[in-house]
Image (spheres, one colour):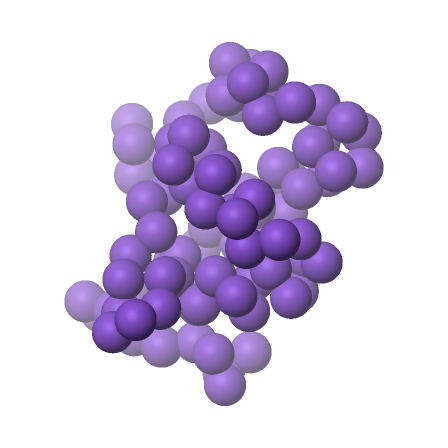
Amino acid sequence: MSRDAFDLDGVPHVALEYVAEIYGVRETWLIEICERGLVGEPRRWIERRAVALVELDRVATLWRFHVQLGVDLETLHLVLPPPPAAR
């Protein structure tokens, strides 16, 4: 993962395209879950969007509920607590 991980304001981040590759999802899906407030806001680093590494567990949870179990994002937004940064 170190090839796509980088430090942004002292916090380790990873590029969205790499996260999409890890979970086998479209980058647009990741952008959507970020914009809905389900994970922390994606940050920009040069021309790349990125999320903090600490958000990857939450991305995995969202992926399991949405992709594997078919729960829609609106329902996830209602039933899951907000990410720690948004509290």
